[in-house]
Image 1 (cartoon, rainbow, N blue to C red):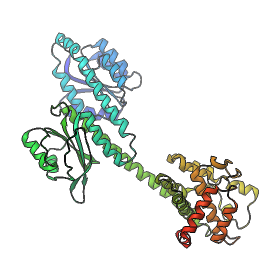
Image 2 (image 1 turned 60 degrees about the horizontal axis):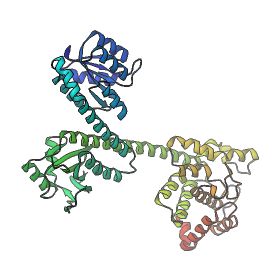
Image 3 (image 1 turned 45 degrees about the vertical axis):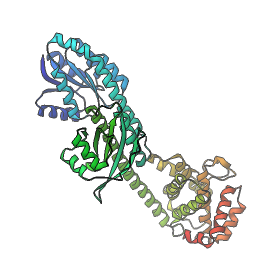
Length: 502
């Protein structure tokens, strides 16, 4: 056996090539195979010290390859790699003889560290067999612990609602995965080159004064030695006290810089272990894993929001283009949104509901893209066929916006803003409270703006006449409670309501 030789079995050419170059650069003798069958042929012809194999591959998967390797070359160490954080898969693979189980994306340094550890234990065949029997349980226990932590990190951070929740989860998870007593997150302010305390959690009952800022010298220390570090000597603890505020009970600190897109974002500090021992390199690995995941969450959220806003702005521009073709409907969607928001506030709607109206109100007529200009700008009454075409625009609008992954309330406004309380509306003929609440608000706002706007074939109604028309159609076209809210709004604000809509 050539104990220093490595075989990489990976169907992803980019991953295979980059890992090959990294290990080659580190001085290892490396060969590659593009799938399970090719890997098996290599193993039959050569006695490798270590095989690194992906799990999901064509022709023969990694688990099947593992089983064949253990039959042919029982002393060859096999490292499994998977894109899925599957605890049961890891357990099964290690029970079948895998030396370790790594989930993607992995760090190349992590892979090399595992390889070097395995190679250092590769002595005589008899000794290796005894060594495997003695260590397989401990390695399996360690891997189960590691994957459980990774699963917890992914499960929590994949479901955060906002950035504030992310900060709270950072300090909470850092305590759980390191068994620390206290965790503090400082957010970096680029403008003032200062770290401000943003979130803190403690498991002990000691009342320690909060330090609103972190001494910037601590960042200089981290920049000299990038990456997480453990402070546990008297001099290092004294240095930390100067930066974070003195406290006699701090015996050890895990200090971790937080980067997003390579830019300084903050510092996470975890103090003291519950078991009173110092932090370990395993704790450093888990905290780095946590911060890496948090960084990806922030990057992905920022990217999604940028794409989302660009798309929404494009759609709003399309709506404006449609409305600009007819001087009588210019800024119609903007006015409808303003009216709907005023009514929603009068009804004490939650902020989340106001946000929904703000979004969907501006796009409620996006479906008119599918209606010809000849119908939209017709100066006379529509024929029955033309009216049926117009009635399709809520369905077309909902279909256009479907890929955006809108919330149910947003979809409801787009599709149902022409339903009537008496069930005679369109497109679905919903009646009464079956019509979504926010759609009922936008429906009234839409009707009010239509009545008070001039058309080529008629003059717009006055504000007072339009309000009277709304009253007449309570419990027929409109929800009477929403009509009452609008009347109450008008009575309280008077002429200011009209100014708000201009």
